[in-house]
Amino acid sequence: MSSTADFSSFRMPRKRVRPLDAWRAIKALINDKEDTSQVFRVIDALGGTAEGKNFIRFASLPTGAAIIQEQRSLLETLSNVDYLKSLPAESLGRHYLAFMQGENLTADGLVEASQDGPDLTALPPGARLFGNRLRDMHDLWHVTTGYGRDGLGELSLLAFTYAQGHNRGIGAIVLFGTRSLSSDHPGMGVWRPVLEGYRLGKKAQWMPAADWEQLLTRPLAEVRQTLGLTPPAHYQATLARISQTV
Image (cartoon, rainbow, N blue to C red; front, top):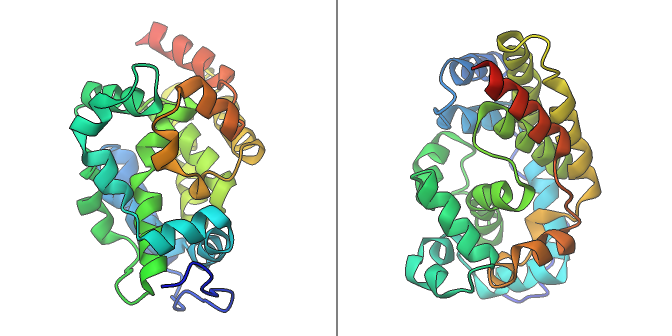
């Protein structure tokens, strides 16, 4: 496939919006925050045209076009533990590896859960590559943004993600999830760090098109500067208050 392939006329297949299915998945996710398959079900039910629009944007950028041309697999790179161990101690790659090992996660952990999400099999190879790449970079976003895998961290990161991609399914998870978390922790100001996540996502560089393979080799502090990321101060302060009450 040529790096100059024209995807400007690309459209995701039309899908019926299924709010009832989304609501069932959101309730299941609230009841079991580790059931990440529900996230993909909500995206499938409410995502609409967001992913198609984001793919066209990705393919129109030099980095995106190169990634499509080279048929890169971010998952393969993130699964190569020996390679990540070989990187400098201060690099994003080493921080990512420490995060994954500390959380007992693997790079392919979201692959099975994503089977309940949008069906990518009928899409052009470039669009499938982009969809998989979005899935596989989620934990990289945890590391670069500074959001943990606690409930508040996940919702704040999803608010950041919504600002980057405008997927209505992700927006719905943020709204209902934050409402539930706020009920669990009244008076803790849970909405403030979530809104902060949205604002930080609006200010940052468009991370779906980042050259993550190259960024993995660079110091984490430098990567954050390159991507226009600032520390999520309200998240850190709110999480500390919640931790004191547990």
